[in-house]
Structure formats: C-alpha cells, structure tokens
Length: 168
Image (cartoon, rainbow, N blue to C red; front, side, top):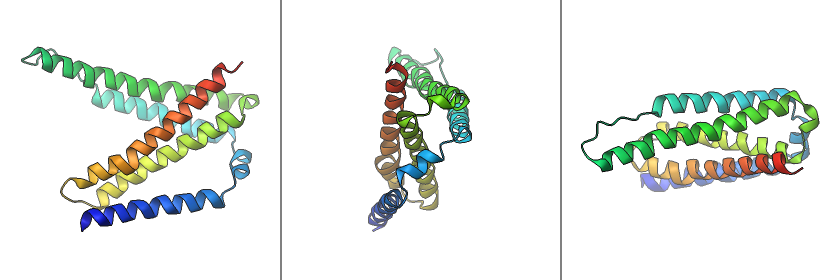
C-alpha cells in the first residue's frame, strides 16, 4: 500500500508541475532572465559539482583483486570527475553569459529554465524521500520518478548550451 501512495504522490507532483508550467507563460521567464538568475544557477552548479567531487572522490589500490581496483577507478574516480565536469563547465558558461547580456537568447534561456527545473526536481525528490521513510522502495521510486527525469532535463540543458556555443 505504501508503494501505491508514493506513486500517487509522484503523479500528483508531476500533474501540479504541468499545471504550473501551463500557467506560467514562457514570455514571463524570458523577461526575467536577468544576470543574477544566471549567476545564482551557475554558483549552485559549481558548488554542487565541487562538493560532490570532494565527497565522492575515492581511489585506492587497496582492493584484493583487480576487479575491485577497476570498480573503484571506474565508479569512484571517473564518475566523480564526470559529475564535476558536467556541473562545473555549464556553471562557468552561465557565469560568462551572465556577464554579457548580449549572449542571452532563447537557447540559453531555455537551458537555464531546464537546469532550474531539474535542480528543483532533485531537491523535491530528496525531500520526499526523507519525508516518506520505508523499507527501501523510496530510493527506487526516487530514482525512477525524480533523479532520472531531472538528469534527462539537465542533459537537454547541456546540449542546448553546446548548440549555443558552437552555432556560429
């Protein structure tokens, strides 16, 4: 019964987010895309990337087998570097965009909106997972209905930034 409650609450959040998106016209967002919103998002990305890299960067040669060493290298070191790069460089690009308002266009504004929505979904997912403790199913539903969709939104945002950077 608890699993059904979590699915229903996730569906309600998605429905309310969709209704909110319909209420908010995209023109309202593009008019309020000032430099401070770019800077705040940039510093959140840079800080989160640095914190994640520092707290999850582990690499040692202490494993008893070669498989342990490969696992530690692949999931410890390389994944931490990948997360750091995927948060640091978009954050740095947002800082560059915030300093030059002539670079504000539909691609960068859409990318910023997707990044903010993705960050909001991640925060909401972790809050919901902490508020509804159960026997481990909240992590599965949190990943399936929160983290993966937020990662997909963020991937689209990064692709939009890359298209904007290399479109000329």
